[in-house]
Image (tube, rainbow, N blue to C red; front, side, top):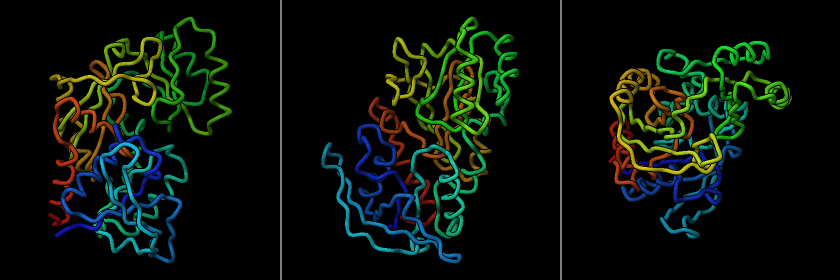
Length: 315
């Protein structure tokens, strides 16, 4: 049976289709004959225990500048959907968290991907700390004295917002850099939360690998190499994608975290690995599947819908 699928995302008119994972998932769903709907998070409305949204039927085409068409908005009880894709980009703030509470009202009768309660309870830079032996030395704090002591012990460090995304706000500070105090003052003014400090991994110059897992199993990877004068490898920040294969260490990492991903209902996950270290577990709106496919890797969108259809009885 075809599925009714609603995609909660940033407006489809704003996306860059060449590298957008949500778009790739929508294309595959359309090719399979599923019926697609689109809405942005601000359209959610909870009345009593029922969740509504003003949704538009959407058609998608892999044509730059002509990639979508939308029907008229219709206020719809989201319990009528078979699947909801939770795909808006962070920041992972109270607005994002509120949408997860609202989506819980329909999940799991309507399958929300990824599970909204576990998305809320698994912030990407905190979830990874459940596997301390897999990650580089990491400090989460607002205390400047703690950060100063950490740098004295480990030398070069990375400082970044705890709930940021896309490489925004990431700073590489050398052991003798005199900007640390000013940076921490700025972060303290900008963010109410703690921030994250990690030992700098020089292996990042060779790339920051994004590995995609479906239902806890590794299915593909892409290496992201930072620009010459940047420490960030994120594609949004100018990183260059290149073909790659998984190492034995990376397979070990995936095998270790896979059971936890399945237990939490995370169907689509993207992890980041630098050298031998796991640095993030991305569960909100992980990206990278179009790049994997472009370099001859697996059709991860197809594998994703195979997993969803197996859970919902759709075909």
